[in-house]
Length: 291
Image (cartoon, rainbow, N blue to C red; front, side):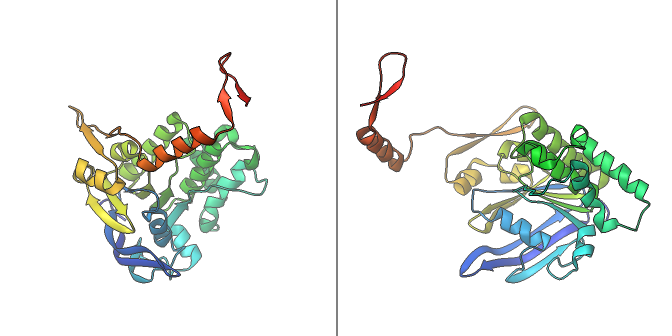
């Protein structure tokens, strides 16, 4: 797949789960060599869209093509060679060594290359995410951020033309967030991988994504370049909060939510707290005692 090719094509995608419609008439293209960011408020449908792209959810209607295949119809091994997926919730219940978890990413390619090549790729994936020192630890002993880095290493070891990531940096400190997002940008731009990434950090999405798909209530509210999607009007409408988009002299983009008084419901709750809590703050040492 060459840079610029249509790695993912979605047309008229609708997803229903029981009586609930989660996605409605979604259409967009993600290209090889680009990072496509999925943004939008909680419940907008971002994770559902990623699940439809990965083949974990079958569409009610519409067409999805990932690296030339319909993910809901292709067999698991074939899809595992075309797309790698990092879910939002990274949970491992068994005491695997970290290196063994990352090596699981090589399973779709088992028997197609020399085993020494597999070892080299696992080493490189661990090193790329700063996880080499964790290799011989049980994964259940790791922090949330460390597990997220190991899970990303597994995805990288899978070596697919399409990578789907759901909030990969949510549990990471700021240094590892920046390193991981920069890594995924370089993999897209230099290798030609199509990266689709769900992000809540709008500043990070602006800095590292080439293409933005903004979802709201299960529909696409905006689709295009960062410049075209990041406007005060679009973001304020989608997030139902006044937002100012600030552009620096170097055309760096940052997003500033405007401060305002809390909604009336919050004021009512605070008033109820003040009238019903069974304690007061003592004058000495700022301690709290029961009345």
